[in-house]
Image (cartoon, rainbow, N blue to C red; front, side, top):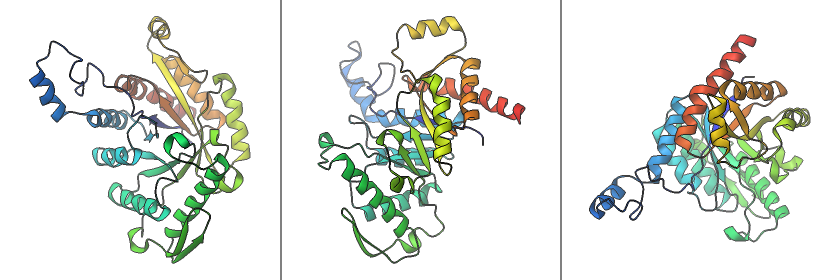
Length: 313
């Protein structure tokens, strides 16, 4: 199966002096009247939309919207971006304890209806007291499993009943609201250590830890063997440049994780090809300076990977 490409859309990036949503005081030579005028017209969501459109135009298959402590609310970002794009899938971070299960299912139904089934769910099971969640980690996993059971139940023809520890449904169901609509595929983070019961609801297992790039193919093969019914994805920081000297300049000012894909365009494409051969099905690329990097990845890396795959077929 061909490798799919998603962009990890960070929503907590501060305003950049070169972008439209800069605030008063960042450009002292600019008249305050102009600052106020621009703030009314352009904001951070315009920037996120620009990244999403760039990902779509340059060949990405989807966008992952994480739940970052200082970031935007993923459901709100999802709604905004689905109306500004036409093809890419959106993977929305979903916190199981943030609302009633039926309400979250109804939101998903509405999103699928207006987006032509482009949403998936990334279960964010790592909430804690900092997010107002008092449950222990083990109990949060139980709650996530109940939510996914509920989602499957109310997406059926119904009526559906559930008597759980965290969610209770009596004769529930979304009936005609979901008729002909795809239930959102479910992504789970490997770092959450999902058990077999939770994995039974999943479609994608995301490697989201800083694994050494050299050991990643073996890990992918192992996960592929252990979970043959799941698609295996990996979150990969990216630094790709045309020439080695350009890479050296960037490496001098960046602190990259062990799992980062670093190299020239051809070198990075070759590494992605190796991961695909090992069984990786989804590469979730990430980088700062998102507008620049998403164009580089889409225009210079993705095309090379796909061309190589066609030649090898």
